[in-house]
Image 1 (cartoon, rainbow, N blue to C red):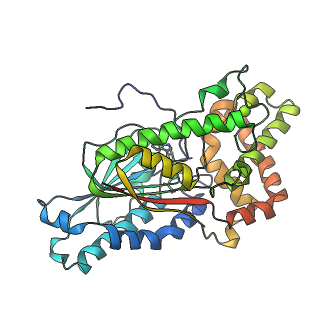
Image 2 (image 1 turned 180 degrees about the horizontal axis):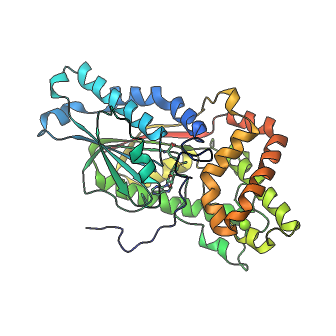
Length: 362
Ligand SMILES: C[S@@+](CC[C@H](N)C(=O)[O-])C[C@H]1O[C@@H](n2cnc3c(N)ncnc32)[C@H](O)[C@@H]1O
Ligand SMILES: [Mg+2]
């Protein structure tokens, strides 16, 4: 048996609790991203889920895992939608009397605020709820124990900042920037290689854990094939964060070397890259692989909302590196910069910027 017990994974959870800065209150852009693919998930379950097999096996629960679930409410909405679609499939096949019980595994890093997650579980939920702490870059479940895997806006997190970025003497030392989007090729290349390693271990783990015929739905920030890294909305957001940090260093509020050594371990993949990684793994067929477009409400696309989302997701990693005392000042500056770039941010948000993938364990 392989497990994670000896591996320490870096983790930077979203802001927990349900206060005004929390992920719970500042994750509606991710929810818009999930809404954009709900209808496709329904179709995929209706067309591709193999319920006859499940029906003929001994009576066991239908097991769903949400990897990188954070604190809700998005995970609850996603799990309910999947269960509705699976139940619909059983009914349409005439198996209503063989409806399985459902078990949902909510996974995130151990440092995730599972208390908030558990306290806000929907009281009327049609499933047994289980928390699974640990990194999805390692093993999380026994062999062939899951029927369905879902992960939304989590796989963009790398397991760590690529090592090449950590040495001042390296060509990939990321001076004056915090991300690869507008960085020299060496930096972008180091990120690409780290992402490939992480997705490779992710797929190896899930290939062992999913039953044959099981489906895996992945939704994450994405970039169309051939587009430059700097063209993604994620890239633009981190360029803005980088500018604000550089300004603060110029004013002596933080040190320059702190900015140079800080890098956000987030990667935005293209369909082509993911296709190659899935094919190299060889255990899954690709049922869907497409760039989709979230449908955020215009009211949600403003500088304040961008700043609150950035804060809910990044406060943990930023305060670990720079200290908590810089956060308010940094967010004020980012908010002003978001205002300056609001037209560009809005238009990028309305372009295809998420990668939606459905795989089937073969
Ligand atoms: C932006 S949140 C998305 C939450 C939720 N799926 C949604 O769509 O609102 C990303 C989550 O992924 C989690 N995450 C990142 N890397 C992870 C890993 N290696 N293993 C488990 N969870 C991870 C983070 O801790 C965070 O809670
Ligand atoms: Mg840097």
